[in-house]
Image (cartoon, protein in one colour):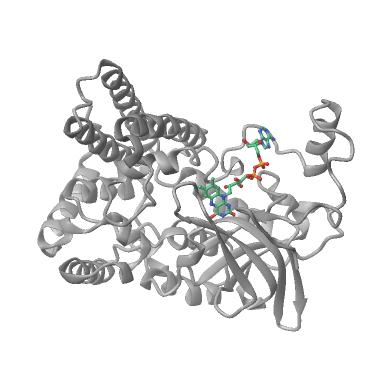
Length: 423
Ligand SMILES: Cc1cc2nc3c(=O)[nH]c(=O)nc-3n(C[C@H](O)[C@H](O)[C@H](O)COP(=O)(O)OP(=O)(O)OC[C@H]3O[C@@H](n4cnc5c(N)ncnc54)[C@H](O)[C@@H]3O)c2cc1C
């Protein structure tokens, strides 16, 4: 099915296609996506040079963070233009040069809630790649119950001083900045006492403890934060106004890429089909049946994306589609991981070395995807507070009274067997 987006957008598509053809340096096809994700330091040889040149050209054409308004260094592309751009880059097999959470989560929140001075300071550093962000929201006792975070932020002169613990932080080891949701007023209803702070990671009271996955990789970490300092200038939206900013961040996390997300699943699926053929598994009727199941689901994601695209093209606000698509892809990807494991066998559990195709990593990551972006990124119902959850568990008899001690009497947290004490 081809969606007719109208002459204006087809013209835009043609211009992007021509631009890519004229500007892509040779060698880009050899790029290893994993190494690109890990940062340019992981690239070497001609691929590194090609990527460098490609980034420079994209930057000059304002095609890095292109969906940001022109006034802050983007190209002001609409949602549907961005989707067309993604499709064209995918078709040409060239990377998008993505600034990760800086581009998709922090930047849009600064654009909406930051001051002019904050926009002028933080946004160019994201576009240039100087600042790479990770997300400090989840805590050991506050995941879905995000508004209940306990990490404290205390204003000290013209600085804010942060102490507490965060967990599940994706890519913390690759970031030099973290956006932290912390409690700056414990005496008001929980949503009203939070602040959203951009804090430097280096030599700043943040100890990163990688969480080792069964694959051996450590894609996320927990952080022990003790006296981390940031200027008050780095508080976005004002002190105690962090919830609104966090909601903007999560709105972007929910909807991000929903129009073209099927593209990466499509590539991953065909990688797996190739692997099944190579390994002589493609003739197995059960494998074939499961691959057909995956194919139809990727097709459904594509149609869902097209529907969302049509909504955007008609300048209508998207409805619950983004949340539905998050549920759809996360449940799909869990099952796809099981299928990939059946096809690849023990090879499906590598420690994510650079150089392996995406399908070989699918089993390792897929079981986590239903939780990635957070249950808070796709709420099915309002999250109960921790005491509410505990009292429900006690009432249901699933947990014996006394199971929950006070914070101090509970055993120290463990990280993969290593006993750690809270500071
Ligand atoms: C791969 C991955 C990457 C992540 N990256 C980051 C990151 O970079 N930064 C970050 O801050 N966080 C990150 N997270 C954390 C994540 O987004 C969630 O916030 C966190 O996993 C949820 O908290 P929890 O694990 O304590 O689960 P809980 O909040 O304890 O929830 C446990 C289960 O209960 C369900 N549940 C909870 N409340 C309700 C309710 N009201 N109704 C129905 N069901 C409910 C949940 O859906 C879930 O299945 C990541 C998670 C994963 C898996």
